[in-house]
Amino acid sequence: KQEVTQIPAALSVPEGENLVLNCSFTDSAIYNLQWFRQDPGKGLTSLLLIQSSQREQTSGRLNASLDKSSGRSTLYIAASQPGDSATYLCAYGGSNYKLTFGKGTLLTVNP
Amino acid sequence: SQTIHQWPATLVQPVGSPLSLECTVEGTSNPNLYWYRQAAGRGLQLLFYSVGIGQISSEVPQNLSASRPQDRQFILSSKKLLLSDSGFYLCAWLTEKAFFGQGTRLTVV
Image (cartoon, rainbow over all chains, first blue to last red; front, side):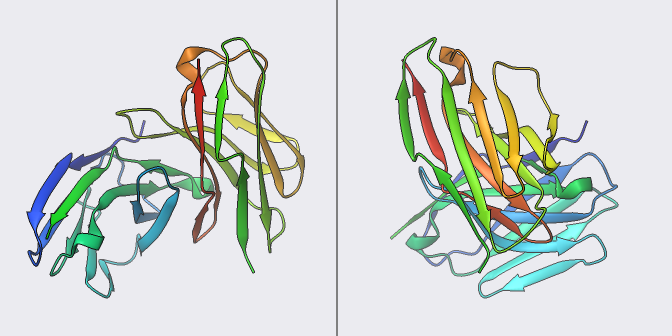
């Protein structure tokens, strides 16, 4: 059974700091790896999708990497802002487009 | 345009009452549809998914059921709710992109 682990569970940083969120998965037969953002009481917003043939994707201040051999992905956020405060979820994409999620990292960026 | 709708947004139901949550999508045909639940302190757990009308796969045994009566409609149901059914329920339409509904906060009292 596929398992996705996210570390740390919570992170609090001052505004302007660069930070890294970590995700690991147990099955290397991955179709894609996705990162989402969830604001309290809301649905999910897709941030970045990395296909299994890719190593990284970038969008603005966000950069995500994928290392299939080690079963790891990282989400790098540059120059963090208070508006970045949210829960960040990593999801392993398998067959039938099925997504298996980690428990998330709760990020707080303090002004 | 491609959109997904889920309702209601919040629901408070007594133990033993029935449940029906509805999800519909627009802008596509034959979508792969999913129901997830997020309980307090836990990650998103896949409950059911459907790759077509009348086709339902259950990921975990539980008090809930799902149906897909139409191509772009996916329904989550229960005949008798339990306290443990409380949580945040999300409908998803997953392709190369992921579309999520806004969620339903269900509180069973």
